Amino acid sequence: MGVSRAPVVSLAPGVHRLPTLGDYINSYAFVNDDGSVTLIDCGIKRAPAKIVAGLAAFGKHPGDVQQIILTHAHSDHAGGSADMVKRTGVAGVTVHVDEVPFVETGEAPPRDTSTRLGAMFAKVPFGGFARSDVVQQLHDGDLLPVGGGLRIMHTPGHSPGHISLKHESTGILITGDAIWNMRSKMTWPTKAGCTSFKQNVQTAQVLGEVEYAIAAFTHGPEIRDNAREAVRGFLRKAAAKGR
Image 1 (cartoon, rainbow, N blue to C red):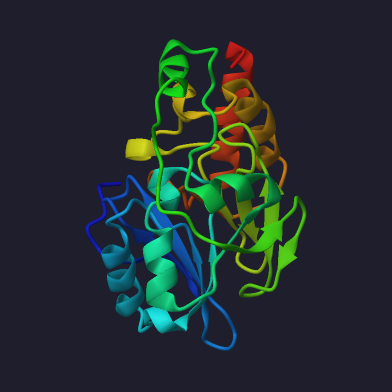
Image 2 (image 1 turned 120 degrees about the vertical axis):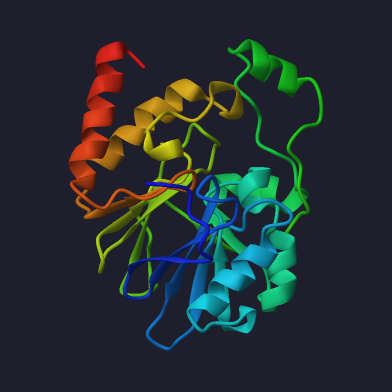
């Protein structure tokens, strides 16, 4: 699959991927029964213009967004959140309870100092973004009333409060940064970008255990055909290699 230049990619009725830097960084939009929109992730600082264009492509406006959920507090996911809060008029964002301190201060989570690059990043300010208020705190297993039910899966490691999400009614999984699919090739996130790369590898195993029809990624295009088996195959190979 080539790099998407369309403002929106529809995954299922009421579920849309919003590419904000080609397919390399994605946000997602879910349309609820009342026509309101739940937005997942806000990209880098300049991403809101792309998000607004994506919303317009399926007939929505920032004012239709009633909830903003962040998978985690890295600048390529939360960098545009303060701007989107202003554009939409929502009171703040929704994140896992363990991610609250980072979102509310605009400071990136700690880096994995077991890697040389991570240790370097840990010594200097890196990856900050404009802070946002948190209006709802999430926990593992929460089922949000979003377009038929959005299940929260706490998959820490990339950051302490990193989450993946499963849309119950359409069978769409959003991996967040637990697994990347850059250039249509599944990989782990960069070690230096994680709080604990080892934990990321461990907790991502849950993504092979749940049922879904489409695997969607915050980095890279979705997998529509045999998605669960593709993810499980990636996880098996990684386990066999010991990482």
